[in-house]
Length: 351
Length: 255
Image (cartoon, rainbow over all chains, first blue to last red; front, side, top):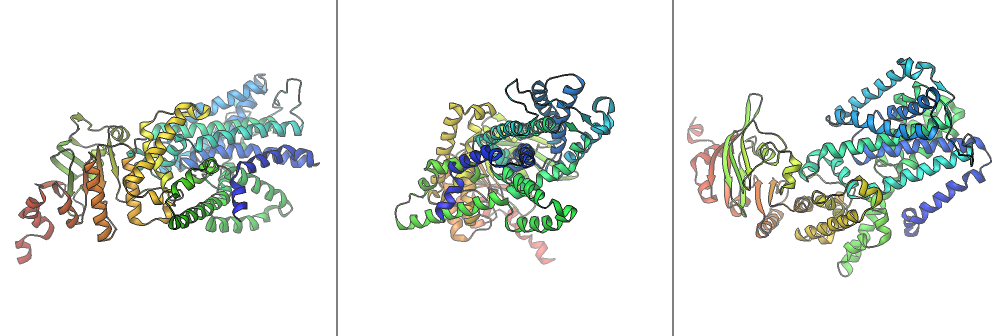
């Protein structure tokens, strides 16, 4: 049992997952599956962004889908209407995510808790309306077709599914790596203090506005970059990308996987995406299965699958250390914080 | 240490703190007592900068801190605990304390991305400070426990430790002994004495009179937002105005 438990948090598992992701297109002969996996990865990147502001910093941002759409539209407009190549447009999308994120963040983060959530819900809807009604810029409800795919510079062709899968995988690994570094750093702990309480964070000398805006901008850059990749693979987008449904989908991924955990966003996104695929034959009736599953999950694993596991493991380790403590010297503190393996997972633990 | 002049805070027509002037000397235990709704917590919020005063002036170590943002005041060396202890339930005691020293560090997003030496050094510093304060409050043996699994008194001690991790010179404690039993209260009082012995000035709000009278060097009594008395525990015990505010006057009893 202990071995299995430790395997789940060891770096070995992460490498194993990565290897699995790399060989997935080789062992799967179904191109559609690879395509589904690639789009799931794109959504996972966006969910990682949401995890920064909502999971770590505790601010429920309901405009996240809107920022995803902004990234997609920046790429679409620049490549189709202005003849840009994909990669410059991709960088522009990230910058647009940062700029709009900063502007919205500075205003909306003056509000707290549900006021913030309601405000960002409205921001998301305004983004949707702008994309639909501002025909001169966005082509209105028709959407934009023939978006340029990412250039492979003669080496690879990203209009093919498999190369694109690897491209998205590379971005996903980069995203997870950055979040893992963030979450176990002092900056991540700062965000976490804000999540506990604004008053407490301030009493610890934390500048609320500066840190919240930073977390918000990071999350919108993630969302916009994911949106830009999405535009590059689907190559046709419409205002529906900004639909609030996407935001709530992402919240579901986050809740299922584990809000505020490192691997939760990935696990949640993949689990729900594949479940949806498997239940496709049921069409709208699949909610009959989804609904009760979500309810059970929220009741018994309020911190999602990953969060539930980490809590269980943490308790177990703590109890073990206490038992040893009673038996011998008080080496308990070195027990938990001393081993390098435990250090690696600190991120997940405190999240 | 702390000099308050004519401090007033109005909420609409109600003056929660009304024209209070008081001086709290350094390196001792200063207590603020008063019936419920007397404005004690508001007084703390004003000193810590959580809300701006309507009128008056707050001087800390000779510096005017009136209306300053709370995070800046914290960096000047004023720490506080809250009536309800706020900690992160799903993580360990030690993990909760590491962020306490964050205000003495400089690392930014860029340091995180490149994993700079500054960040690594500062994280080490925060970690060792967390271990130190945990030892100071006498909880080294439960550093690995989950916050959700420790007792109320231990939570109070962790909150103390978190305040101590900011390297404060003045600590504001809002009802530190609320909701714990008499024996634990006595232990907590010992801890507060220990803080003073280490050069920290303590200001506390408390309802438990036994604790206050044996612990405080100076007491200020608030009632309906106004200061009705200040002095040593002996003076306060025998002050007729204080007795009246707490128990009602003899006329009230006769009527």
